[in-house]
Length: 85
Image 1 (cartoon, rainbow, N blue to C red):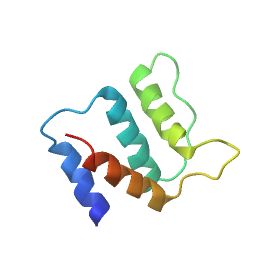
Image 2 (spheres, helix red, strand yellow):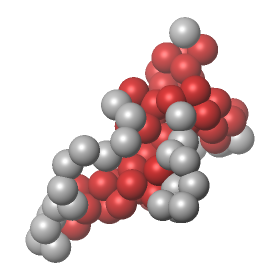
Image 3 (cartoon, rainbow, N blue to C red):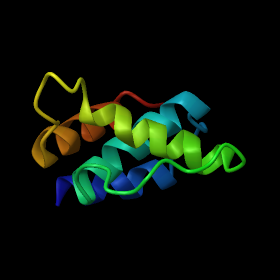
Image 4 (cartoon, rainbow, N blue to C red):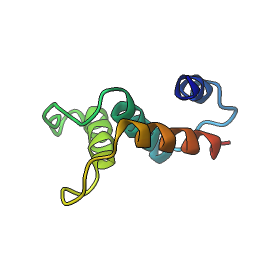
């Protein structure tokens, strides 16, 4: 419930987050709602989709460590939103 509230809050931020922050939020949101990436990386001509895929994949973490859980991704998302203007 708190996660959904913060997902809505992002849509109403007074200042637009940087592209980097938007990608971080996107990756955390996807990890929290879908889980690990299950699709192949978009081609080099799909720059926007590729950046979003990379942001989502980055949330999974280092292959030597366990992936970020849904709860961890939700918590990190909420923290990121709270630290946004």
